[in-house]
Amino acid sequence: MQHSNSDSTQLPPIVIIDDSKLKQLFLSEILKSECTIFTFASEHEALPRLPEIRPQCILVDMERPGEDGLATINHIKSLSVTADVPIILITSTDDGDTERRALEHGVVDFVGNKYAPEIIRNRVKNQIELYGYRRELERQVDLKTRSVLELQDAIMLVLSDLVECRDSLTSGHAQRTRDYAERLMHQLIADGHYVQELSPELVRDIIRAAPLHDIGKVGIEDAVLNKPGRLTKNEFDDMKRHTILGASAIANAMKSLHDNSFLCVLRDISLSHHERWDGTGYPLGLAGNSIPLCGRIMAIPDVYDALVSKRPYKDPYPHEMAVQIIRDGIGSHFDPLIGEAFLRCEQDFAHIAQVRH
Ligand SMILES: [Fe+2]
Ligand SMILES: [Fe+2]
Image (spheres, rainbow, N blue to C red):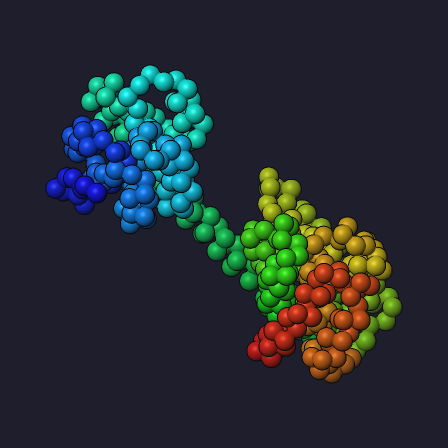
């Protein structure tokens, strides 16, 4: 490897992969005022060094002994550190077919001794600048996204605290159900179930939405919500409305937004966490896979937490009894795959219950 330019800290690093010493010198001479240059005779030598060099542009000679130029381009693009780094092809012929194939493989421009030095310098400079703009834009988008997500988290925390303020009988339920849901989803993914559906984004949205699954309870009157005893049939019917109240409040908020995956999940979780796999749940009596996945997932943390928590009409059930009740409900109350996943991580539920109660 050759490394040219005395003031290397100031200039953007670029990599040249070319077996011809003459071409390396030719390009280095043209580009040394703009870049810190690292030259390699082969892909074999260059690739291991790319993570450390972090080039902002890579110039690749198409024909090197024993190495295929297009394969080199693919290899560079397969490395996370250089996946989006602009690649310029070094070419000395007017072979249109080679250029077409190189463009199809993601090459962004061409240089070579058929071009004037000034053109070569500007082509490389332009690509480095574009790459810099793109990275800066991505950084800004990341920052904005993070701050929006943090704000969303903070608002969700406030809302779930408000729900808990009203519903004094189920203290801590919101936060515990979030922890259970997170554990359960990791188990599902580890088991290889619903892996396609449970994208990192959906998992994140479900974790965020979980503490608010009962948000509709703010619309239930105190006499029912905080009744220190078992609910009558009418009162229970009234309580069931919290699913619809929550979902319609979220649906209203969604009208002013183009597309918000988080609110979709929150609406679905709110509406469907009391549905049952066999269609005997509420409010809609949905069955099987027509119940949104987030609702099918939420059903288990919700029931488990209700079982192991104290209620005005019952003492907390021991963990083993709660596990047995859920086991008995697999295939009737609960989605079989999610129920089985629960059985594989029920000890972690016990741990969360112990820490969070
Ligand atoms: Fe609920
Ligand atoms: Fe709940």
